[in-house]
Each structure stands twice: as C-alpha cells, then as structure tokens.
Length: 332
Length: 285
Ligand SMILES: Nc1ncnc2c1ncn2[C@@H]1O[C@H](COP(=O)(O)OP(=O)(O)O)[C@@H](O)[C@H]1O
Ligand SMILES: [Mg+2]
Image (cartoon, rainbow over all chains, first blue to last red; front, side):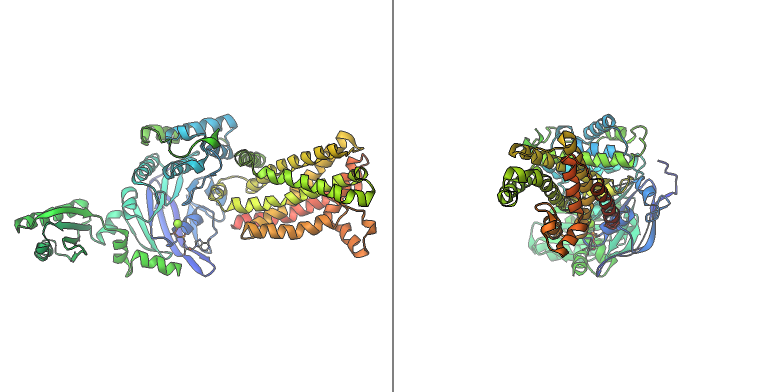
C-alpha cells in the first residue's frame, strides 16, 4: 500500500459507454490522486454507476482509456482487480447466506484457509458492530447493517482503491453518519476512496475533490469550496412573526446581502441566497449581519436557518437546467 | 437456527459507533495470503452452493420428486406392454430413466445461473483476482451434488421395485460416475443459455425444447431397431443415447468400451464449445 505523494489512483480520459441507444457515459475524464476521497456527484441516471463499473473492470468501455494505479482497466484487468474493491449501489452480498458465511466465502476466495477465513470474518464483524447478527441471513439485516457488511466485505483484503457507489442512498441519518465515519477511518489508513453520491453535503463532508457529472459528462470539478463558491455559499431561510412585515424584511435583506430574495409560498417565509465567499464562516457572518439589521428595523424573526446550496442549486448554477430535469431527459 | 431467528429488531442496546482503533486494527491486518488456485476457488464456490442448499432446501425438491415420478410413471406405463412384466422391463429401463432424469435436471443449472448472475454479489465475484470460470465451475460442482442425490434416490427406488443390476455395486458406481462426468460437461450448455437469455422463463423454454427430443428420441424406453431409419440415424448421433448405452453396459457388468469412449469424447466436445461460449458471455456481462 504505497501511496506516494502525487501518485494517481485513477486516470481516465474520454471514457465512453453506450447501451443500445442510451449514451450512458459520453466522454469522462478523471484524475484521482492516491490517498484521498474523490466524490462523483450527479443525479440519478447521470452515468455514475456505469463509470464506476468500467473503472472496476466490470464493463468494457466502448471508447477512451482508464488506468488504475497505472494498470489499464481492459488489458491489465487482473492487476487492477488485485488492488481494488467494489461496494455496489445494490448489495454486493449474498442475501441467502449469513454474515459470517459471506465474509468467510470472500476471505477464502482471497486465499485464506478455512481457520484463517473464520478468524478474519469474526474480527471484521466485531469491528463493524455485527457480531450479534453474525449467524443471521443477510436478507434479515436492516439497511444500515447491510451497508456495513457490504463495506466489511470490501476490506477483507485492504484495497488500495475502494469504490463506493451511493453508499448512503436510502439510509436513515444515523446509519449515514456511521458510514461517513467508516469512510473517514478507511481513507485515514491510506486507502483511496472513489465515492458516488447524489447529495452535495455528502460529497462536501467526505471528499477532497468532487467531479459533478450530468448526462454522462463531467460538467465541473474542483474542491467542495470551489464548487460551492461558484453557486453561492447557501441561503438564509427566515420566518417572520408577522406576515405584514414581509415586504419590509425583503428590502432589508436585499440591502444587506446584495442578492435576490425570494418570497416563499407561506406568507411569513423568505429565502435569500448568500453569494461570494467560499468559506462557511463568511456565509454565517453575512447571515448574522442580516439578522441584526432585521432586528434593528423592528422586524420580529420567529425562525431562522442557514442552508447549504442543494445539488439542484449547484446544477442550476453549472448548467441551464435543474438536476431533476436532467433525470427526465436522460430517462426519455 | 439462523432461518428461525426473527428479523431486524434485535438491535443492539448500544448503537454502533465506528472507532479508529477497532477499524484501524482490522484494516492493518497482517500479511496477505497468496491468491487461491483455480481448483481451490472453484471448490469455494461449490461450498457456496452447498450453503445455499442448506438455507434454501426447497431446491432439492426438483432433484428428488421429479425423478421419482418419472421412474414410477414409466415403469408401470410401459412395463407390461413392452417387456411383458414390469420386473423384467425395469432391468432395461432403470439405467435409461436414471440418465433421462439427471439430464432433465441439468436444466436447473441454467435457471440458477440466470437468477444468480443478476444479483449484486456477482459484481463482487467478478472484481476478485481469481480464475474467471471458478464461479461457474463451483456452481456446477454444487449441481453435481444435486445430481448425486437424484441418482441415489432413483437407484434406491429401483432396488425397491426390483432392479437387480448384474454389474453389482461397482458397476452401478461406475455407471453413476460416468453419468455425473457427462452431466457436468453437458450443463455448460445451460450456463450459456442462462447468461444469454433474458429471463428464467425463456431459459426453461429453450431447455425443454432441447431436452425433450434428446431424451425421448433415444434408446431410453425401447430398442432403436424398431424405429424408422431416419430416427435411427438421429439416435445414432444423440450423445444421450450413447450415454444410456454406456451406463446400461456398466450396470449390467458388461462394459462397452466403444460407448464409454463415445460418451467421454462427446462430453469433452460439449465442454470445449459451450464452456468457451459461456466464458465469453460471462466476461462481457
Ligand atoms: N445495463 C444497462 N442497459 C441499458 N441501459 C443502462 C444500463 N445501465 C445503465 N443504463 C442507462 O444508462 C444511464 C446511466 O445509468 P447509471 O450509470 O446507472 O446512472 P447513475 O448511477 O448515475 O444513476 C441511465 O439512463 C440508465 O438507464
Ligand atoms: Mg447508480
């Protein structure tokens, strides 16, 4: 597991994959530095899974090239396979078998003998908090437990590169936090992680670089800060006590923040975009200044929150359409 | 037992918190073993098939009920008419029915591959640095076990009904061994269809279309000498007919080297052709 500074875990150029008439991936370039979490962010149908499957040697690209730690994913597939693990979007685990059996099966396929495989399975189940569920069939696991055993299965042999395809889609907030913690620990030990997600906050929490993909193409890439600053740092949501004060509040917010302020369907609610600075602190500063101005103008604020830009806002800023439009068009 | 445990709800009283110590320790874990040999990987997949039989025992129904039905039906249907007595006919029929039943249940291999391969776990298998055909070879090793169970059931039923093979225990074992070896090779036809066709239903349909003529247009029920010339010509090149003749000869204690060789060679040819086609499809999936 050598992660020399500057080494590239993944280098892809012009990757293309077409299914019949669907152009799932139409020319993707990626450079993933070793030892980091790289986020691939995009709406449903953007081509994330297809791209991951090509990089993990499961699909043969129709065009373009990709290497993983310098090995070509088509010509040197076996060398690539010995360094990567994949946790697919849908459970890559045998649901009919128990947790122990699943891990033992994979440990034996990785060369452990039976007693060694049993020990390895037990220590992984323990580390992932699944000891109590060890002898239950995986089909009886909850969503969070499934994700954990799936990730445990991916690190039986610690991979140099781990693909996580939408690891938290459909999970409750607590399980999602557990998965985030696990990812942070894994990358802290030197494994490179390529993570796909539909959530900007997930990419923001975990990734040091993000590629935004839409309709099979990378439409932006950079650090989370760079991406967010291209959109604005978020928005302030304000709820007033008295609906009659709303137009006055709108004027105050426009004056202090210098951006658009939209009126929400509820007569007491307003939302203002915060622009400019890339760090969260600047956004918070601007927001608190806005609050102070509202108070000074004698406007009573009942509730207030500072929201991150959503994937949809990122999309609107990067393209001329929203994330959900994109999904429909791809599906059509 | 595992299957009886109530679901989900046994949530641990303390919520799971991943820690750098516990996870770090399993991540850093020791020296890597060498990658497994082709044979050892295949046997491991065979073990998976055994575990699946343990957890989903229904799949043994096909390999027991169906052969029992076939044996009883044909012994009593044709016994009197063809050989004058069921006891005498059974000596001729049983090896044939054995071959026919096992050949028929090989089609479940295709159905199994077709449903299994669609599951996410195959993505994981296909990203492992192991001998590529091992997942399929292992599944077939599991099927071989089912063929053995089916054969045992038919032979026991045959003994009860009055089957008394001249070849004795050795002859019967050799006959079953030849049948199993051939069935292993023959099953690759179905792994190919299992990968190639879209649904379980179409796999079943195609299997029936191939298996019915191959098993019925043979020497299983009657001596082909009574058949019209064109049908005899088909029976002559039908590998199932040669397998039946070979198994019959072994169980009768008069091994027919020519038929045994024919069977082994045709098995080898089937394996070479359909094994290659299967792996080509598997790699492209
Ligand atoms: N095996 C396939 N056959 C046909 N179309 C596919 C296949 N896999 C994906 N697609 C199509 O390719 C596009 C991209 O899909 P996918 O890579 O799964 O996107 P994402 O993972 O970002 O949701 C979608 O329009 C999808 O319907
Ligand atoms: Mg996907």
